[in-house]
Length: 178
Image 1 (cartoon, rainbow, N blue to C red):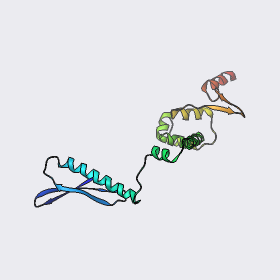
Image 2 (cartoon, rainbow, N blue to C red):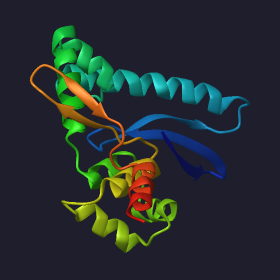
Image 3 (cartoon, helix red, strand yellow):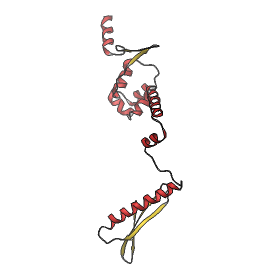
């Protein structure tokens, strides 16, 4: 809601107006400023006028009002459909690229570079790599606040591989070469 200030005959007048979703201006209420509590009363009246105007436009099909996602989802999807959509979304997130992962977590390349103690250019190159050391990938994921988990998946089961890409294995290998 906005206020238009005008003078007539040396006296202040106020007109409260608003724009509807079609960007059409609606003059809601006007009056002479001077009476105590004018704004409180006028704003309450203007809110009611504006709400009725929007309801009428919606009823006539002239505007579509914004709806919360949760309301829209509950009105248009069964619980089974919601569960399937959630499962699909989780599967898609499981198959995400490194850049998309960083962007989804709202972390910039610069912020990640600071955490990894490298340059932003190094982060950019890392995100484009198709092949890298597991220890590098583990550092990338940890810098984003996660943990890297590696699994071997077979027909009927999945096995978590715990020793791959960890520093302790690399240290043992370097000692055994001496």
